[in-house]
Image (cartoon, rainbow, N blue to C red):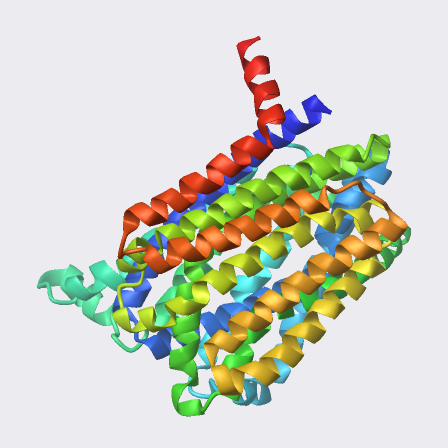
Length: 494
């Protein structure tokens, strides 16, 4: 058990390094985008990327997780599982692009981007690259080739960031120069194409990603197994439905803001909402790093049939860290908004930040608990659980956005993620009991929410009080977890 925790910590740190560096570098784009784009333009950018998230789940249809499951089940045919999954995804992606080409006019009308068909096609090529790379990247994780995985992610991120800096900062200056570089700058630069520059940078970066994965794509020559494909599809299809509901829970609030608020202000409000949401980056990146490291490890532990107590201990430690992130972000929220939200009009939405952060803690807990139905091959429960969350999302957004605006969307997000976490726990205790320490987890949620709100209220007014709230939470953890801390200290000394 100790070795498992040690390995998970090491893998989380490595994947976390790539996530942290990647998110930090991408976070550099937030002040650039918010400085050079209007609220409406930032809203368009957020709208497009919410669509991208939905398409990512639809076009991978759960085969990323399916690959983990069946590469463990058929260890002697792991490469055939890999080739089958990758070939399937590439084929369906090409079919999808053909369908969109035939229906692009009504789709552009529905999205309100009739004047910008280039947005749709750049978005589609971006998502096609991401989708085709999904299983090869999962293969790297399964083989514990974390350094190779991190290298690929960092190449994409660095290229994307550098191109954004070039398009938004260097190119306008270059267009004022004399000579050939000036001519190139004037030919390339258009102050009205800000959203297009964001998409173009992402598209070029994704091309580098695919080039880096060519050795992995070459391995799909081994063949395609129809029996394995059918078994993977049966396993993964409920995960896709659950994933679609999950993305809807996470992203559909952007669409409700776009379509439920008056058209004259909807994109501005969407830009404000998305800008403030970016400040929850610390919790999002830790949850992502944990998922990358934990998912393959959980499947291995499940196959070995080990004591399920390890899953309970991991959730408890995970909650401690997530709640620390909650209090810390709220304590320094005033500084964060000044550093990253360069357009002060975005500050009008800061009141939604505490609600969104608490919601992300619940999302992390749900993600952690969801392993039970994957280990027990009862993936339909993932569909049920996220379906429950989706019902909360739709109903609460419809009820709350018209009277409350973006605050209504924040409350809907919190209600949805809390409902999913509770449902996952309830179903799990019936079908795959894990002895979670619910009282301690709820205690951490309560104390971090109270201290976090106090820190938020005094952030920028009395920073000392905000710092004391952070230290207070750490002190509480030190008292509650003193036995575990002492064991770690003794182990380090030994």
